[in-house]
Length: 260
Image (cartoon, rainbow, N blue to C red; front, side, top):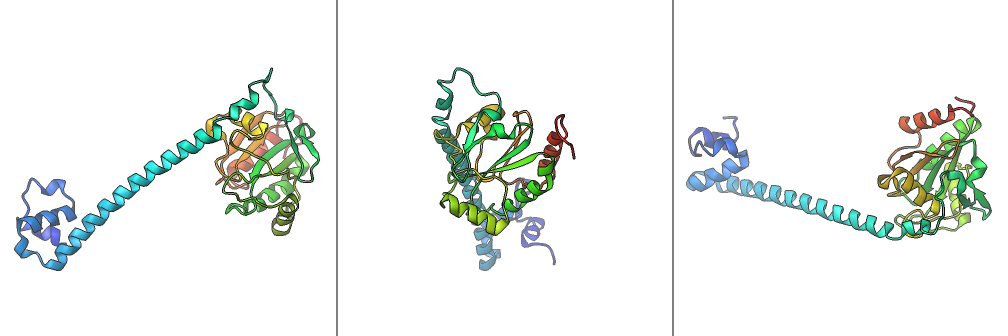
C-alpha cells in the first residue's frame, strides 16, 4: 500500500522487465501510461508528465546558462587583455620588483611603492558600492593588528567592475572612514584591468599568471618585504581568513622583519 505508484505498476507487470532497470520512477510511470492507459487516473498522468517536462526544462536551462557564462567570461577576458601587454612593448627591461611602480594617493600626492621597501604590502582594489565592501572592516583589522610588525594595507579604489566606485576622491575617503573606520592608505581611483590598467596590475598578472588577475572588486595581492609578488587572493577570500593571515605572518617572519 505504501509503495509509490510507479513501483506498484512495475511489480504488477505493467512495465516490461527490460525497461525497469534503466528507467527512473517517472519514466517507468510514463511507460505504464503508454502500455496501460486505461488503468492510470488522469491526475496521476498529469503529474507524471509535468515532472518529466520540468526536469528536462531545468536540465536544458542549466546547460544553456553554463554555455552563456563560459562564452561571456571568455569574451570578457579577451576584451580586458586585448591591449594590456602594450604597456611593456617599448620597455628595455621589465620591472622585477613591485617597488619600481608608483601610484597616487587619494589626496593626489605621488606614492612610490619604494616607500614601502622592507614592509609587507597587501594591495586590494576596492569599491564602496560593492557587495563585498564589508571587507573594508577586515582590511582595517589586519592593518591595526600587524602594522607595527611591518604590514601595510593599500586600498586601490577602482570603478572597473560594475561601476561600483563612482564617487570622487573625497567621497570615497569619507565613506570608508565613516562606515568602516578606515585609516590605512588609499590611492586615487585607478584602472586595474584592460588596456588602460595600471602598470602594476599588468606586471602582477605577468608575474603570477592569467588566473591571478582581478576578476572583481577586492582582489588581493601580497607583496613581500623585498618587493617580490608573493601571492594573490580572490574576491571571496576574506581579509581575516586563515589563509591570508598565514601568508602575511610568513612574510612578516622573513629576515628583515620583527616577526609576530
